[in-house]
Image 1 (tube, one colour):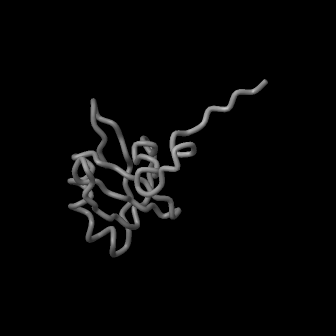
Image 2 (cartoon, helix red, strand yellow):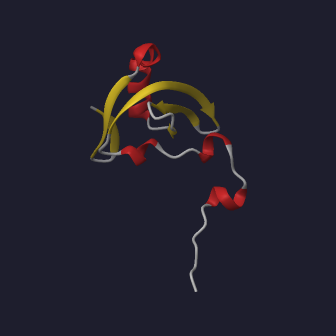
Length: 94
């Protein structure tokens, strides 16, 4: 008999931004950010990042939010290529 593990969002009906995968899933990868939208949630600011393959990810990392604010104008013009890495206990773009 095969036991299947279900995801929380699949059984809870959770949709919207909370259902998006975390940007941290792209750790170690190089990708192009084509859009970024900043929002306010119950626990502070977060961002929805769209990549060149039209996938969306979310992040509330303060370091990443600061970097995204700095490159927002360029992202909206033509996209920005980044590599996401983990340094000690936080993520950053290089």
